[in-house]
Each structure stands twice: as structure tokens, then as C-alpha cells.
Length: 75
Image 1 (cartoon, helix red, strand yellow):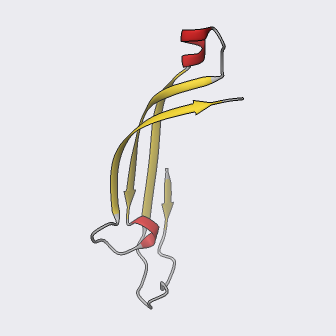
Image 2: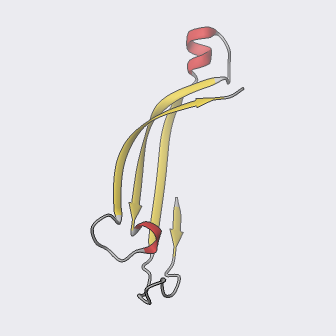
């Protein structure tokens, strides 16, 4: 989880807003479960919450509430 305070003025001269970003994930070691290869492939679900994306003031396009499917492959 990240919290970033106001960063001053943006390129248009407007004050930026405080920003919050949270990403979570619950992962299963799928490589071990399905192929007996521990630590190679992980699969799971996650969620992303982003308030005042990129420090923009509240408005359309600045809030994110996104469920996710995640896949991670280690070579």
C-alpha cells in the first residue's frame, strides 16, 4: 500500500491531490500443485484500489476499483 501526499502544482497549474494505491493478491503455487515443480508458476486473484490516480483531483477517471486474475511464472 502506498500513500503519497500532494506534490504541488501539476502541468496546468492546478494543485495535486493526495494519492492512495493498494494492490493485494492471494496466490497459489500452481506449479507445485499441478506439476510437482515448486516455485515456478503461481496463480491467484487480486484487487487494486487507487484513489486520486497520479495525484489528480477527484473526478472521472481518477478512481480505480479493479478485481484481477494474476499469473506469475519464474524461469
